[in-house]
Amino acid sequence: MARIGWEGVFPAVTTQFKANYDLDIEATARVMDGLIRDGVSGLIVCGTVGENTSLSRSEKVAVMETAKAVSGGRVPVIAGIAEFTTPFACEVAKEAARVGLDGVMVMPALVYSSKPHETAAHFRGVAKATDLPVMVYNNPPIYKNDVTPDILASLADCETVVCFKDSSGDTRRFTDTRNMVGDRFVLFAGLDDVVVESVMLGAQGWISGMSNAFPQEGETLFRLAKAGRYEEARALYDWFMPLLHLDARPDLVQCIKLCEAIMGRGSELTRPPRLALSAGERAEVEAVMDRALKNRPVLPDVGLKSAA
Image 1: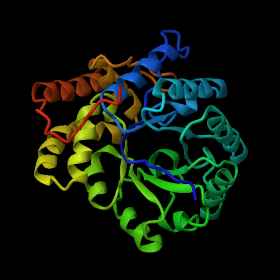
Image 2: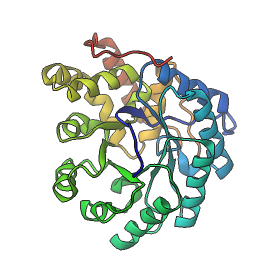
Image 3: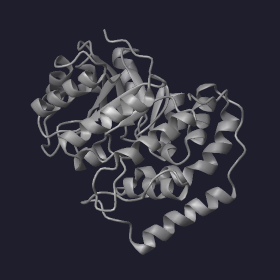
Image 4: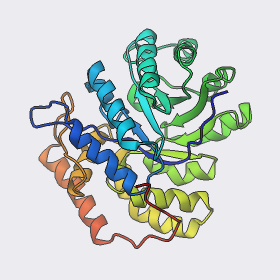
């Protein structure tokens, strides 16, 4: 069975674009390096926040290659795979292996609303096409196909399927999965505003959107919860929650990138079909950020160290 050491906070890294919407690979590299220097545990590239479906195949490979080079082995790098067909997904998985990444995060086949056995067959097909560890990604609000605990349990015999990221917001999924297959899969929280609850129920990691803007706060929150330091975690969670709610909106990418830009960590520009926030929406996010920055807490010591 594929072996992993994935735990902690893996920001779903934003992909940076130039004013003409061309891929800005140098700016993307700076974003990646900044996150690693701030002590995150790993990187997810070409995920939802990385605007995977707005990238060409060659651009996805370029982002993977950049992440591999920037990381330099300091943290694991996992690439998202979001394709229309299982064969296309297998091709991208092979590219990730060629680049030398540490794993792939596979989304259900896009556009087609598959039946449960078809959803399972898609993941099984990709898992058979690669020796890389596979994280199954469930995000029914965005991708419409729900990877239920039953579907996940049916993949227990696939040796390369080792991890499950759930963004349904239903933390009962972790308990149901564990009751079905024990600790067969490493569990990852995938929705920012239920992370502490997810850790309490066994999540070993967190694929985080808002940690792009606040990587140290994200890693600290996760470590507090993992250590059972719930009083300290609750205080930080209370402060963080208005920001974390932005990860649960349909326009989460625009919101996260705006927060990232306010923090001086990247550009807010998204590639169409994602358009800039309206004036009212922008003002709403800016107000949330203003309140957060005026009350930014001193972080408890959790042994956070830069991976630089």
